[in-house]
Image (cartoon, rainbow, N blue to C red; front, side, top):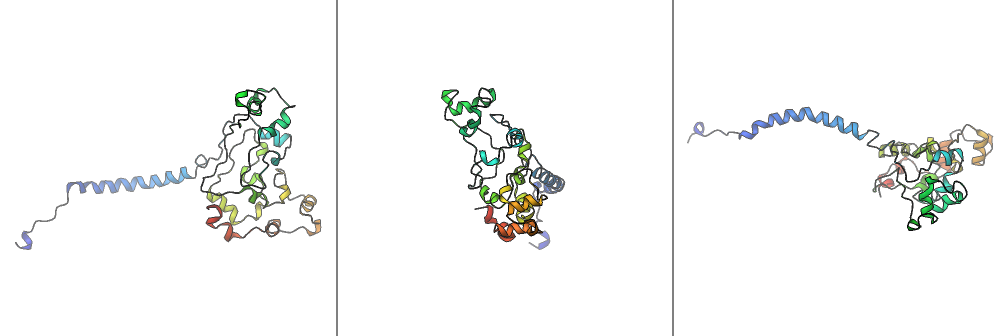
Length: 244
């Protein structure tokens, strides 16, 4: 049989749909990418503004703001452990055995303490977690607090929140922005929980650092990085710093 008489290859009928699929994909793929980027960076996706209703209506604005209770009174482990820790019921009852001891809002606290429903005595208050990181991310509160990072850097002005909400995105890009240049976020360690602290008060700053006003550093951030032995950008942005 000569070459001219050989049967020509015929594409199967289903291949006719390939052009349509390619055209549809060319239209839908850019839309998908735009929507993916939009929702991926959206505040809802990042949980910014997440504000769960807690079992006990505890107001940080009242306790930490109006009354001026220091963060470490309740979050006792924040400067020595990876987790800030929630206060035990005993901490609440240090005050509330005398202050508003019969308030309906504190019923769960009294139940947990053992002066309410006996079936719930000793049971922890089921607080709802507000700021949550993925399990594969290692974050140590003590490391940050002892490096002079204030609570408000990550949590916002909690002392003004009647109900705590997530104030920052807490995603990798947000963390890396600080790790690449931590100096502007640093302050003296003894001012970490002071929500109204400002470096403008030179006399107060000198006292915090144990220096005279004349010897105050021109660049506070760089001075604190050296004083607190904070590693440089290379270590702070290494993958193993957060992913262990």
